[in-house]
Image (tube, rainbow, N blue to C red; front, side, top):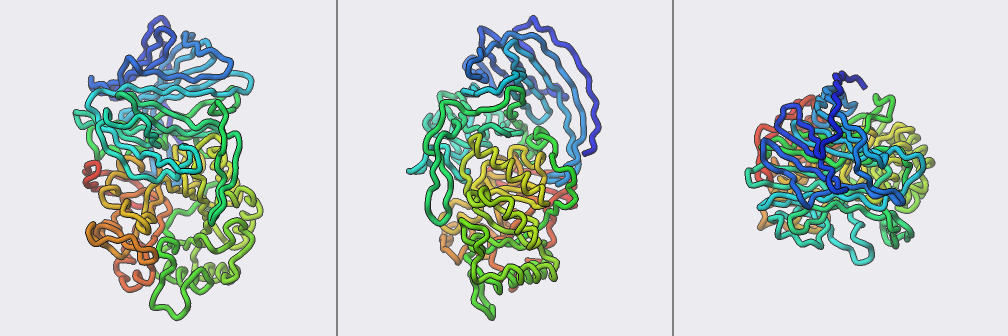
Length: 576
């Protein structure tokens, strides 16, 4: 990866009880206070408070270690570099311009605070020799009065704890003082201020550590991490999944010398500034995939949402060889690069037990002749058990992209699963997408072959609910999309008004217009876009499908010309 770096180091007086760092344009100021044994942050933008005291505090509680915030050294480093992502999600060149305050403490824990023109971030770093147990991480942020909170609350399932979720919920929009303190929200979340400024809170560089949820109480935002899993069971059913039955009294077991995830705060004076913010990518760890030339973004199809309900065909539709050859022909006709073979091509619990109605050698050979790539759905529990053999089988079939599904957690063990799957796929030159997944959190910079993921309430909800509506769709670019690519799977061709919409399995419709569906292929960032509409209907509308097929999935540059959270967005993107 090429980059240009300009760095200056300045020593900061260690006698002061307060240290601060300014953004390069001097508009943002982040202050770190170390008083009475407590560490806290206060943040101002052009003199307006974004985070304030006295209730705010941050901490990293290490079992057997005292949180000693006596400062031994502090410095500020200024950097201006350019990142060239191998898969350009928003743009092909990303300027990474920031000032970073580093404070070292007697406890051998350091705090890094980066101030950008479009936000700030902080993280802890430890330099302890032995392995450590993280009891908890404190993240308490005091917010000014009269702010608005927008976030997705977890819906508690009956048979598991509150940390099990598919990360697919509608947004709750309320004054922050009316948020129930019992509600648990997954990130990203948004804070709206009285002066119309917005702040989106999430994380980046999440590895070997649990993700962060949030609660709200009396105007204070509190970070919450899932405790480390202790015991498990596998829930039965069509899609068996591993669930946690008991947890430890700590959140992570890890090595003592390491960096911890970035806590990311993206800020905007105008709503239109948020969708093109790429702070989360900047803060991700650099790529661990040396050769990325085999990573091929593009568009694909998926048959699952419409229930393979094809028409005007000379064969019986279903999960069978003829149906997939039909999808290959459709992809070829309209300029798509691949098709996805969703659940049903194999036994869900055994990736080597192929559906008897499918001839994978025939499908593979036919796809190769047509110049179309194959993609395969997998159940996470099965892929975890059969990873190496399954990847070799996929290589044999010419599969260059897989989905894995039903993780539904982000505790430390599950976060490590994501990294293990991405590395295994990279070793076999296979791209991967995660469904039933938490937000990307900078993952796509570290593993460029982890090209997109779900973590969004998308098109599939049209099967059984009214939740995937235009109001919801117009919150996503300003909130969820700031955390990284999202697989919404637009393209439903049966469109309805709010009053005429009905959730009907296999006869799936969507609320809003045809152009609303088409615009999502541009607005929603996903280097692999999945068309989820009915190809039989698409074949009757060749001009529209040719338009969809011509839309790029990665971009030279993305500029949001105008927009308002939950109301509209106008994006100008130039394709690669």
